[in-house]
Length: 448
Image (cartoon, rainbow, N blue to C red; front, side, top):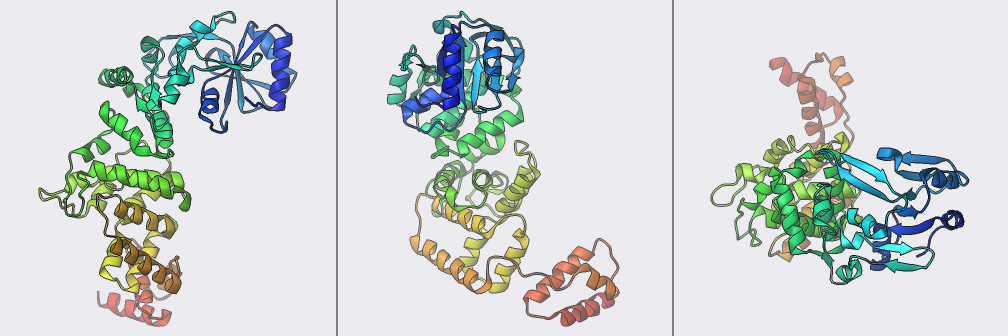
């Protein structure tokens, strides 16, 4: 395994002081998988005391300590490397971080790996011997694309591991070994995941959505009963088979997010885009009829989204809300050969919230996320979009009438002002100049 030059210097200092160096965890797994080591490198140091390791690291930069008992150290000159001493962990509470940590520099590697979650993450790279130590047959599981827990008892002590399995399955396109899956299902049934923070759940969901095939992760969560209500309800929501031969809304959503993963590099806000594709139809369970019609499911989706608290960023919420509301508009406009004014109004409605580009791509993913696609309609959609952009652009025209203009013409600043400004903008899009717009508004509201 290749490591940075400064890391080699630190490793040599550790060895010269009687210590021993192992690289552990995800970086070794990714090395075996042939992936780039583009994340943190975890280093475990044996046969040194806490103070000895701290002193060695101090010679190479400022040392920061993290975690309970400050068990993890990091040097500011080597920020992607985490140094730790072997330790035993004991569960002390219900929360993800409730552990008692006991540092033991002389702990055997056989015992040390028992706190690892999965066999593929229990691999150790012996820096001095330049070889991988595989005590849990993790390489075999990697080669057979199987996710398997190391120790059933210790695995259950950290409920976040259930979500980690989901994102690993999606990222590496692996199957979860049956006993491990049953263990995860039992943890869900015992409500162990209820104690996870929203922030940690959000992070794992983001990793699933950032994978090459996100549906694998969410299908696993479905199988073990770990879906949140707003996703679980999609499973029992039917769709008209002549429009959606793929079946229920869940099947459609899984197709959409997998297609969206292929288009992710084409959009302006990739992560928010993936969240929007996952949630674009969450309103359908509220409004779907027995025949499979879902009238105004976009408006219903906004109501459901109000209770989706996993998204906490105000900016990301606004993006997703806008995508839920307008994800059908462009495709409908193309099918109905809508006039230019309708296109321009849409640009105004999404202004400063989402880009037209991202709205185009969610429209495409929604269209393609079906068991059967009429490619003539898909082709016609692109012809329609390209024509509109070439002639009218992809940004809404600037308003020529402002609130100041209205006040100068005798209007009172109150709650109705926004409604009047919207009306002024509609008149502008119809081709009226500023003078005619103000005259028309004054005439209407003087009568009112």
